[in-house]
View 1 (cartoon, each protein chain N blue to C red):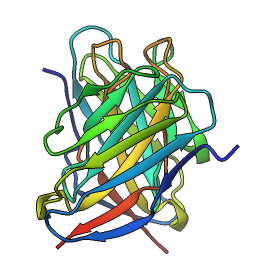
View 2 (cartoon, one colour):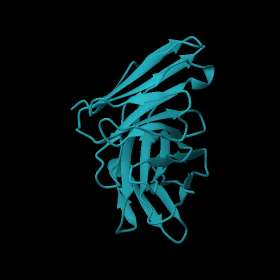
View 3 (cartoon, rainbow over the protein chains, first blue to last red):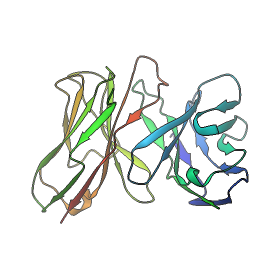
View 4 (spheres, rainbow over the protein chains, first blue to last red):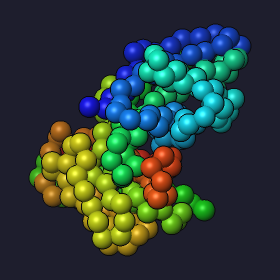
Length: 114
Length: 114
């Protein structure tokens, strides 16, 4: 069965410090992986995706994610956090059907403090 | 482009009442999805559609019905609302065709069932 795990409910970082939000996955076949961000009382916004190719994927707002096949991980990173990055972050994996369905992790709240 | 829109934004129902949530997208997307978001549980797929006139069950379909009579609209119905259906509902759409297109989300509908 396919699944996504985000092991941290909350991540706290100081503004200007690097941040990492962790995600691990379990799929059959090639993984197609996504990161979304949700600001309070808003819908989810797409940040980036990994389909194939380079293991380091760059996305919106200065975020990037590192795909590691051996560790089945897809961690979200940013070199220098901003207070405005504070939000709820979701990792997702496409399931193996031909329907584009995504399986989401439980979400990680990122708190960036000034 | 408005993207994905949802109506209404908020609704309070009494147990046993019915309602329909409307999702509309103006991106000519083939695939559409309905999710519910509950604290600590991420997003769970209720129903989805891979084209006009087609619908299929997701992870948590019980108590809900859907219709996709027009390509741009995807309706979610609650025939007899229950308190367990108190949640935030999100609609999403994607291009389809290939299996790794990202989904675009609406702003959500916050539903309370008393």
